[in-house]
Length: 252
Image 1 (tube, one colour):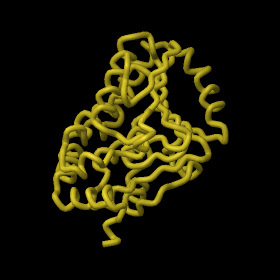
Image 2 (image 1 turned 90 degrees about the horizontal axis):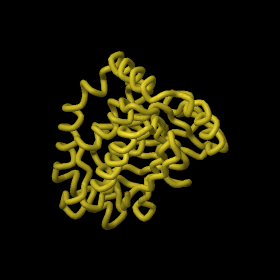
Image 3 (image 1 turned 90 degrees about the vertical axis):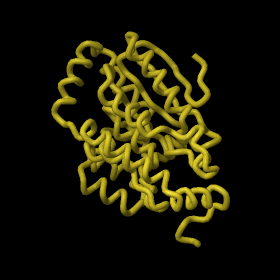
């Protein structure tokens, strides 16, 4: 399949999905969400039982692409319901999802990370939530993040807007394993994960999903909050001004 925003490499039983929007800092738009969903469709319907998500060496994913918001058009903005469903599939699908993070993960990029079953990081990785800078908040990210690191730590990341290091993310449980050479770390874990069966993974994850319902229970509230935030005229103006001038809201 030909994609515009992702690269897909299949080496059964592993499928690697690489976010490939280097000219836009690997940000999320509607096309990326749709193509990512198509790739997961193929994984679910095949023998694939491990899905690895990567970005580039310096940038994993920096969240939503502000360009369409700045132009006051929603032609290719990510639909929050589709994005939430995509993240939910990473956590509930019949495969082990692995976020392999090198460099920066911000905003929605942290959503991709927190949604995955396993997170492996390079020592260079940083994780941040910058939304409050623009009077937004990470409505759709928070249920996934809270499930991983708890309410207070997610609250702290949201309010401070400051990125945390790979080591701090490891200490907090956002990252499961970390090394100076994350490629070697990934290969080590894949050696064991390849041995699992798809039916075993499906049954286990179905059971695990019954033990913690915050993601499913928060879906409608999170999506409604996201839509309200991005439809607010003042928030859209702050985004437009930043995209066009590079000036942050506090610099007015």
